[in-house]
Image (cartoon, rainbow, N blue to C red):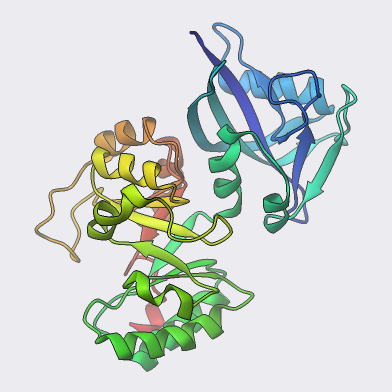
Length: 316
């Protein structure tokens, strides 16, 4: 069965809302909502196809666009390759040129619409930022809180509270404070035993690679409306993350890092190859920083994650 190549777009308005369209009832996956786009013709560049389809379907011309995520999905009756781009600026007024209903929705409202199964990772990618801040170890709780306040003021929207050297009670107390700081400003991801899940309902959970290997076969430990992430270091762990149904992953170490000097770096080429076969939003981690975000996009990543590279300098 030939895989159908499709170019699709996460189109953002000036207010940050995202444009979605309803599929015709008589089409494959009819009646469900989707991100606008269409088939890439043989020999056609993806960006050319995207521009053509958005002009035909919506009457707009993308002005600023970049790769977001690539997805391979097999339905019982069809195989698809989705090349998804984020369009952040366009000319023209979007309208359903083919009679399709449209809706402008917030990132959170995407969860209220029913999409084809292949679109689930796109919904996650559309809701995730390009930077993932991981807190450094070796800091006092007061220093961590000050750094997180500063990061939030600088617009960080995704934070993992990593404190491997803290005793459990100390980490739990700190997590309560950080959850309060992040409320309404950023998504907090915690690390720890799954037995703690019920105590921090607003937080997502970031699994270690060890937890991933232990729990993957059992599937997600909580519903889809709560963020679940996992640390991955190779193709096997990426496959386990997909099997478990996590929302996003970190892939590390891309380059040598002071945090884990003993770890063998993957390198950019190997990371790119692994992401080609990964349908999940992925943050590259290890020896990368803000200056590497565009390179990360080009190899198929959601963005970059960092510990010291993203931690506010004034608090170190």
